[in-house]
Image 1: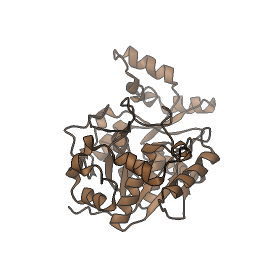
Image 2: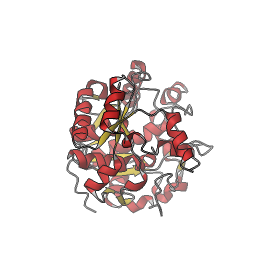
Image 3: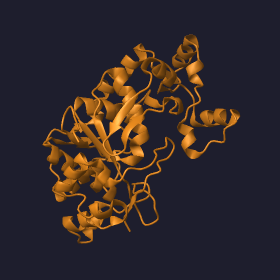
Length: 330
């Protein structure tokens, strides 16, 4: 299988809002081994646009954990907080194209409009914006801005769909994906006080850093649909993707900072060695089959890149949830 990447660089982009856990280790090792096999650079990026939660101590712990795991990255580390002007310029470009508009709605107002429309909103539905402020006139928008009301910049998905038509992107494991424009909604790309979002900054940074292969958890498949739209609108490079399985705890819940997943720091404190942590990620063959226990070795990453079906291909990917099997860490 020929990948046809425009560059062989991969990246790991953690947020310094907590200590690294096993899910982070898995993602970092995955991208690191892929870069080694491809002969590219493994690039570290610090996604610190959330100034309220980002913490220098957590950032330092990321470096310490990667060093302990012997994961080598290039010296030039991009901090997103240092590049707000880049993101602001991108929003301005999208505004000139008529692809974003200011939204003044609160979360409660969005929920109320969805309910008035006859839909019982599930938790994930709150992100599907009903388009209230999209219908405001130019005069109404200017009046609200003059009143110094808070607002967010939303992607005008209807305008984007009309301009771009059908879009697809390639995932090495999942195959070709079609962007489901009709059910994405007008997502937030920036706010008045923070001129960016995860969607905008990650997409722009992948272009600036020449990331040819984006490897990340399969829970971000939906985000990639949005990133593809941004790439085409702004004329950015389009990397290929490999969305890997998630690491779950013994209750079947995705490892995350919010669920207080076991951290690398705590594993080190318990006396475990680097090899112990990596073996913990390899021990379950339930998901991967015979491919599993050697999954993180350089040779097997190579197998995956040339034969993605070695991981098993899911039968379907839904926009609202992913019907993919996952690997459990007990």
